[in-house]
Length: 243
Figure 1: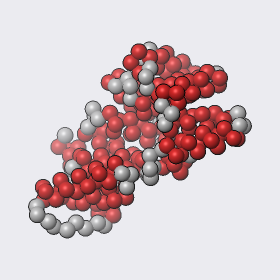
Figure 2: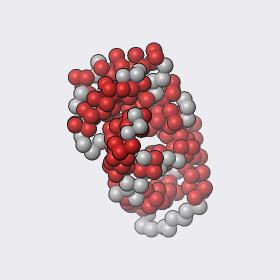
Figure 3: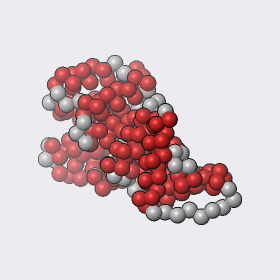
């Protein structure tokens, strides 16, 4: 743990120095740090990631190993699609905070985006074993299943979660993703529509329907669903650009 903290300290200092930000002294290190973290949390909730990042960096100048600030920076980098930075920060936090499921699933997404599907699948499984209703993990588990054997195993595993996760829209997005990859496009569409029925504002369900429409060369449906996915995605997130 000592060496991990030291590693985090180094990363925190490097992140701060790389951006060259300066903090102004106030009424005390602790009160200043708390103020920066409160501001960062509020700005993050508003989707103002750039200003939230500055407040996190100011907090790190006072305590380079502050896990709250480092995690928020990792989440911001992940939301904005800064893959390398997100991978580094979330990977280090995963080692220090192994039970933080949000860190684990976001790190898993970084792994999948980097072509490391098997490791991503392990991260998703770790999360689902502890929280079967975790929507991000459900979708990650499905998307990181590539081979016929993996898809078959994933289908069986996710179906067993029905009593616990059947009320979660992403549960059906995961099942739909697996169905499409196994060649049953109609079943996939039914699952995606079920997800939208549970939550009309589920961005990833509309994205799945849009991608399915692209596969079918249905341009009008694709534009409508992908447009909805973009509109419903978090403000300032890379998802809006991708959609």
